[in-house]
Length: 130
Image (tube, rainbow, N blue to C red):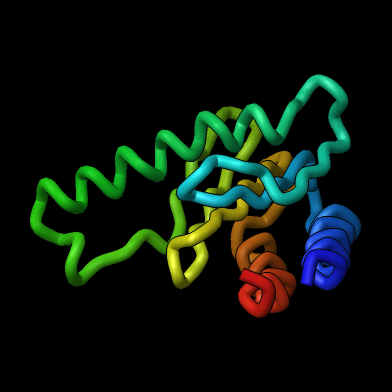
């Protein structure tokens, strides 16, 4: 149901935006097509949809690496974390591998443990709609 999906996505985005310290941007993107289901940024110059499009390539490259290493049958990507000078970029791949959450936080205001715990809390509802 499209309305339910939209409501769950909107609530997820609002929860993340309002409660994760140092929040900059978030998006939820389908792995197969690269389509962004929803996105939000508090920085007008940071486009989370554009970021997701490029980070989809990161996910695919890692999937290819797992395949090449013979790990693809027993291992799956849970999370890819990219630590920049002042930001953390977290690519959280869903358990079924069909979508990923791309979360960007200001690392000078964010605690990685708290960020992960809150993301885990809020993302639970997303599994029901995908």
